[in-house]
Image 1 (cartoon, rainbow, N blue to C red):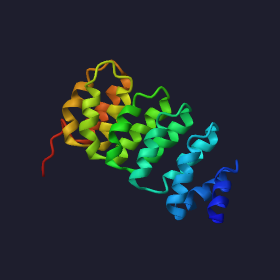
Image 2 (cartoon, rainbow, N blue to C red):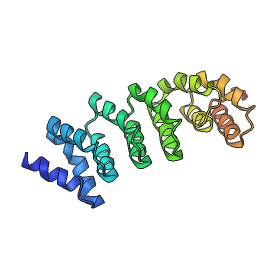
Image 3 (cartoon, rainbow, N blue to C red):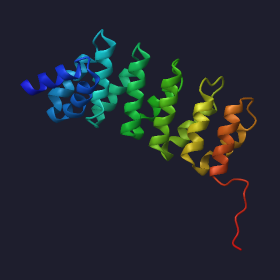
Image 4 (cartoon, rainbow, N blue to C red):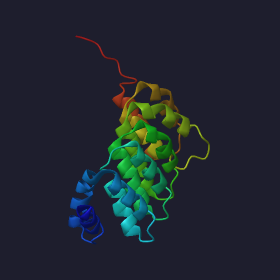
Length: 191
């Protein structure tokens, strides 16, 4: 356990290079390390919570997702950003509902990273995104349309067409981009 204690001290050393090396190694200590990180995730120090979340991503298991979901409710946007980035790295379809909720975050970077995570998860994100886009007074419609456009799935065609009627230039851009990638409106033929 001495090595785990050293790894944790490095993780919370206030030296980003040392902390990143510790984050990459901590999963080798298994369940005791995960339990230690679970405890440090409740620290009053946002930097400790951030590095705890960063290190959790290295475990890549169901317990990791549940802990990352809890971090999506952290009071500090940086911790929420790290959690969303981690969910994107893990690309687990079980995190789609939490990522859809994160699209409503007050921090614009959390919203962007949530959309990126849904893109990384891929096609299984399409139907939840389409349902999300149909909700009224949507705070992150542009990011949701961007995610649909970049996933490139033909099930999104009607939603992307509907988005062309939006007043936002960015939504129009992403809807057009998605439709273009899908080849909608183009005719292909052999010479």
